[in-house]
Length: 262
Image 1 (cartoon, one colour):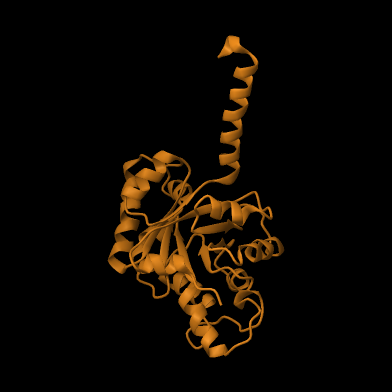
Image 2 (cartoon, helix red, strand yellow; image 1 turned 45 degrees about the horizontal axis):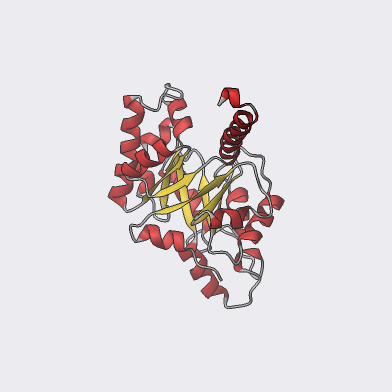
């Protein structure tokens, strides 16, 4: 069975970098991400409309690559979390985690009894269709599964220390846009209240040995949030990256075709 080098890197205090994908679930995507230097790819199911059949294909395409596939599920419900893991995700992100009890429920959905409630089915996608001792598989799956709780609501922020302290939670991911909405300052990413919340999330992670995660959408954000102490960092988002590159290229073509505008 595969291990999860991203989880090991974070546990050792290191950093991991990857891509968050919302739109282009194509056969070549995992290899493209890896060729670009990604340690992980995080597939979004909350906002993209990505379904489990397509997710299963993407997870299979990651098999054999030094790339850790993870999924953001729509909500913190057992049917979403356990199914994503059964299909082969090595980690799950859960949106809008509001407190320690909810965080503990999320962790329980990723663990087999007696420490959790995940249903057992072995010899399928998540264990690479391999035979083997179920007890050994359970131990390996518990060790490799990365659990990410998103902090993006007022309740989540108020309980951020308790969520970070929850056993089995590996990372807290800042949901920056939703957090500004819940704080009543939509899109105001330089507002003192928002910046104080960002620092509060990182501090909670540092106190409890967890990793802070963030999606950077440009170079300025990437540098800023890395400097703030975020160690699990994605770059994106994929439709915006393509649109930006294509807009630049078309601009070059237009200028080249009409020297008067160059």
